[in-house]
Image (cartoon, rainbow, N blue to C red):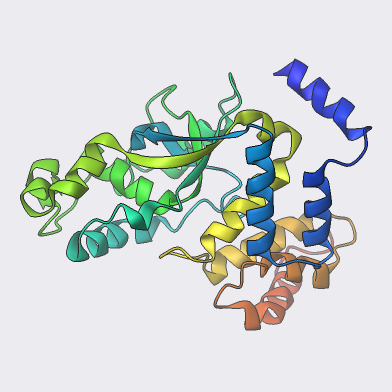
Length: 274
């Protein structure tokens, strides 16, 4: 890991990488979020940083960069699984699934998911089990993890005896039961990109969350506004606002009101608490 970090430092003094140029375009507002994400993914493929693999859900957690470190809408996972069970599982609907390898020896992603999981609605995280962080399709994967772990549920299709049941699900939808047991196919980003171009992961998850069933809500947007402002001595609120709504969330027209709330309710001059 240290050698890769050294290489990343050396790369910073070399001519701009094509990825740097695309990131500069999105920061300057010259391209949209989806075009930016597509360009970055293509460039990562050219670098040899992309592959596809079926991964069991227990090995994939929500990446800390997902939703600007807000993780996910935990309360939506169960309802998403219920919606999918009602209409039927579709492999095509998982075609957007993307994740990134963790840095070898680094437990940041696993610890993030351990704090997120409650053992009631989400599956507990076993030690040394998280190898990938989801960038898109994270809610679906969390649902598959929950069913596999047999957490509490009274859903008529998904549960038996007050817990999720793969056997009960198989009676209704054997294809979805296969997804629970086997996992889904992911497009995987290799871990060197996480070190050299961490912004790439943020852009990919922003673009993915713009079209998923459970998009970023306004509370997560408010938290994202505050976190970015608290990281600066002189917050550039207009720039922060534009950044947070790049994925075109439904509450984008209200971003000025959220900024006003964050300014008024951030704990005084230092603004460290919301």
